[in-house]
Length: 510
Ligand code: CA
Image (cartoon, rainbow, N blue to C red):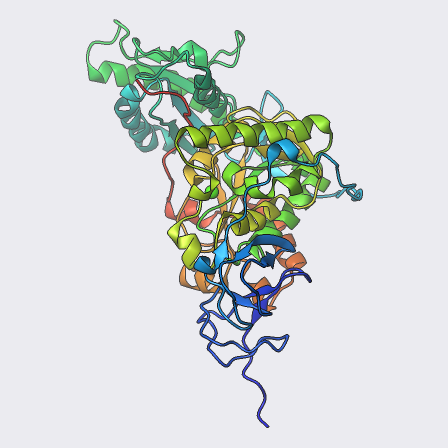
């Protein structure tokens, strides 16, 4: 008798009645999984196989949670495609249990440091960047010209300054500036300029007639940020305008250039995590590895933000039970409720999140995606909740409410104070941020191989058994410290791949 033709698969939880296929080329009908299940049809990589016969209406379980109910009878060994999974309702916020699960104390992690730029406000940056903020999109063309000139003519004279970045956006005028939701883009812009990678030296360029007056972008009366208005009568013509902005930039470049990296404990580090282009591996490889590294940073006293409201909405019960106190539990539910109503205004719900690529990658619905997504937040207690654009207040694991859209989440997390972002992807995205390094983690080795120069770490080795979750988690932790110290450059920075900033503006445009 010949040995069975085995296909590789991953079953996450003992209660699951599906597993996902790991083989890069998928598995064929007739192949057998580790538990003896024989495939009755071909199953692509990342897609689910029924490990038992599932009758119509019966629950389909992954991560030990119900991701849906069978739309019709599913035979054992069949591919559980999206159309076979009936999506359950999102957890009812009004009836959510507030009972908190005791989280075992973990010992502090000591002895790890990084080389960062310490700022006057106590925050620590991982890059030394001159930021030019704008109060309205009208000035963006002039600022782009200034940035180009600073890069060409001035940066070579200031070798310790890493870059000059325009904080470009489409807000500032033609908007209902007094509408209640305008607070979100306004505080986002104000806090963006205070990102730790800008050394407290961001400058503000305004036009002169816009609704968002540049003073509104200062953090307080003591904030000395330079403001230049292009309609200032002192400027005769374009060249004078550009010279006026550059005159303000020069003393800032000089001060930034005098700064040096210094050894800082990991407790000074603030990072963000998010995912984009997720697949069925996200929740078993890259996201758990990120969660493991995130817990290490929290144990070392640092701060980690996770976000993406529509991707945590269906797993909110798992987050509320990790809330450090009643205030955090209430705030988590409040942010979910706000976003439910925001989506309802647009006649949508959280199911609008999943993309065609998610589904091709094996994710049936937002419930399955959310369960895999929240694993990025590790297991630490959640100590604080930030509304969109609010600045970090505490160390530890923090939920920063943002849309899941990659560039919007990136922009909002920068405003909340991240110095570095970790980004997991299964389908692949060249996403990057000019203001902060983005460490890209692949969920599957097929992507890491094909995008060998775009991906920083291959977590797909967890699914194939080449490396343990702990091994990849520690690798990521060390990679984060190397990138934060300027010892390693991430792929997106090496290739110069940076997305435009994209503010979250839930308010009306006029
Ligand atoms: Ca995202």
